[in-house]
Length: 226
View 1 (tube, rainbow, N blue to C red):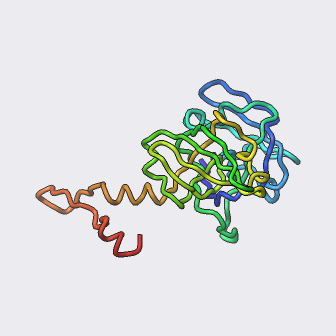
View 2: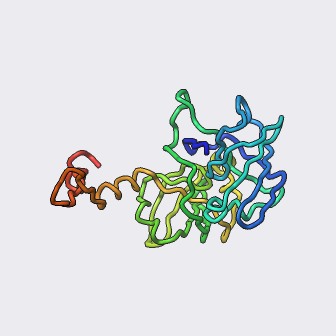
View 3: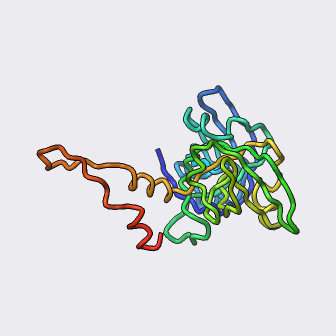
């Protein structure tokens, strides 16, 4: 399995040419151009924020297989021929890090529950499973269909993002409607901080088999600017 890292800066909007879905897996063929430059079979291409491995590359398309976990977690299972998708090729050491680090491992699907206008901007309010809201922070980052966006405001079960006209044109969220589903990947740093704060590690050399708490605490993080 090839693992890619992405920035959440969408390179182009592709189009589904064909999709074969059997409930536990799917094979998808995507029409595109920019992400194919210097790409080869085995490379990772984030499709709606989902890290997929290209198993075939043509002059204007790539093909990828999706396993059951991907089908369960993401909105790829709802795609049909002609649907648009966000695309980003995995980064290299020379890639500018303009967004935030995105793994392409989608956490959950979100539902657009409201769309409003604020001057030139469109505001999208998105509802997700409450267990993931603890990783969503005001002015923090979230990947929506693979696009790195800033969180405007929160409620107990929803968060909002704002898109300027340029962003509306560059990512598929700009053309989505209320009740549409989007892929959500929360900020990876939040998960690691939670793990460090609440997990316990067992000392291999402690004959009394005592559990030793992680040295990372809320007080430590505050003192060090987090």
